[in-house]
Figure 1 (tube, rainbow, N blue to C red):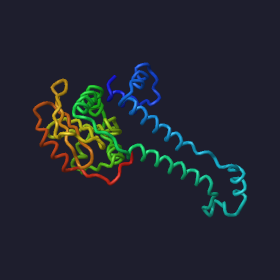
Figure 2: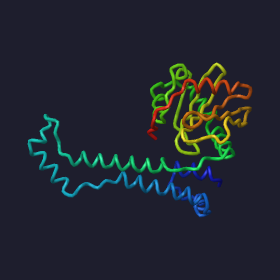
Figure 3: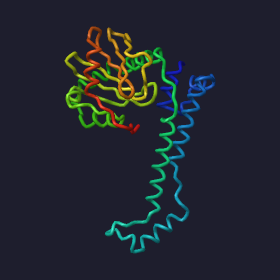
Figure 4: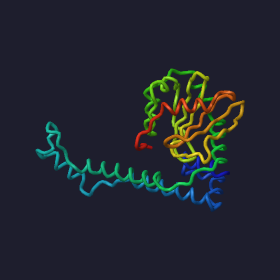
Length: 249
């Protein structure tokens, strides 16, 4: 199993104990580092979500319910449940920030070519078929992009038929289908992936071609039939993108 496939499986199923996953974990080197990082994050996430109830919480709630300060009409309630919820949210935020904010090695151009080829083969045509079979959900489209800190202008938004979260070499990204003047175009937004030598062209199966370019934050991979003016298409799309200060995932 190659390293990119190992990363993808850990991303979707960190507890996977199939023989080939166990063999990869035991391979040492970069595999051991990736596995250790995944295990650390899962441990932090578990701890963040496990917030034990303070001792005597039940008695505290019952007592406060009998006091005037817990009058529902006043909007005042006991503080312990609120504080426990805040603690859980804060711990989770720290865990995610620690995991995503540290120094991470960027994929090589060879890794990126392999990932995009895999991604297209895995669900590229199927997602286009799904986009053609249903009406666009603008609210959902904007939500996915917003979660990744990306805003697209109305002119470009009107061309998007479907979008969903997808794996990238460095975490979550967006997979979108656009209906442009050049025809149907697939776009992968990879918010944490920087292309070592952009722009990069990648030839795919079935006469398709990908152009990968760096943007203000992360990179875009555009996929269309060979012959489409991909550089001009990339420039037009870039002009209609803006980036929020912080991503939420």
